[in-house]
Image (cartoon, rainbow, N blue to C red; front, side):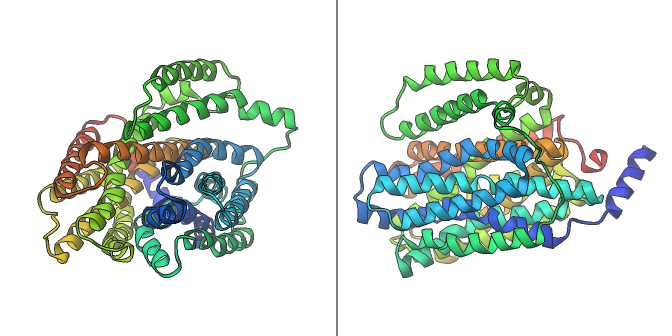
Length: 470
């Protein structure tokens, strides 16, 4: 008991990671949420230019699949080659993909550009976390406030994306969601190069053969096949289900687990993942959390345009309270985590998700006053901050500095699988054109998800108090 109190006192007296470090590495982390969220209001303009073919769906999904597959590998690459080096390389890929998208003559070329952007944006968050953890351990600092900065820049921008995208698309056309990346990339590269002097975090002198061995190329390819088959099947469910992907998925899963169990340096250590129940439970909780979140994120803007007759700019502005409250709730969640631990932080987030789902199911309608829509949007901004702070701090506390990049990469992978799973949920509950009844059914799904998450948080034995973890 006395040892725990002493450790807590030391943790409380530890300095925070300086904002010049956390702020600079967080600049690039806004690229992924921006590119995944602004597309929600740009897709109508893209379809108008290239035609509303089935390929338009892949303009959205290509980035999610590329990011989901690349994120864990980006964390592993950062540990091998150096976190900052991989981070900056990802920025270069984002710039290349953005220019390719601006010049895209066909929808296929645009999809390819989105894949490049997805691969590039996947490198920032895992390696930013690695740099923050590396600085914290090197200088005896606590990373909590830096993680809060990352969460605000990443998840706050997710909710802000439709608003910013609506303004840009309304003023400059859909191409604006591509060129907006270029000044952000330039600013982030300068900031990270100048201020993120975190020492030698990750990186080693390895030959090409050693690098391939350390990367576990076979494991990476099997993981690519596993994630791709999962997301392709989820996408097909909304139109014409590709049932033969299920046995393919099961076979690839078995091969992946078997290979990783025997690999000398596994890409994803499935044995350790099975032993680390706190990490496994967090990833499972994240999947359901983000499925519900993206139902809000994709469903409400479509409902506003179809049922309320709003334009892209109006729909984006109506979603603004989600972003504003989300940023505020992230700051409040950081304080709640510091004082009361992860369980209470996640309890607040899941309760807010439950309440938001009930409000969607019972209050939202095409005839409701705009003030009601804004109030419901504000409530839906609360769970984003609390759930992200709780889950990401829990992942940071149960992994080492060498593992945290890969773990956060897996966290992002699960996040984007949840995004595609939400498309299946929306298709099932609301259909192609979301009306009032469809939105209400989606709201009940979100409420049920909130109940399940709340039960899991309250009953979990793998969620230690922050003070005991310290």
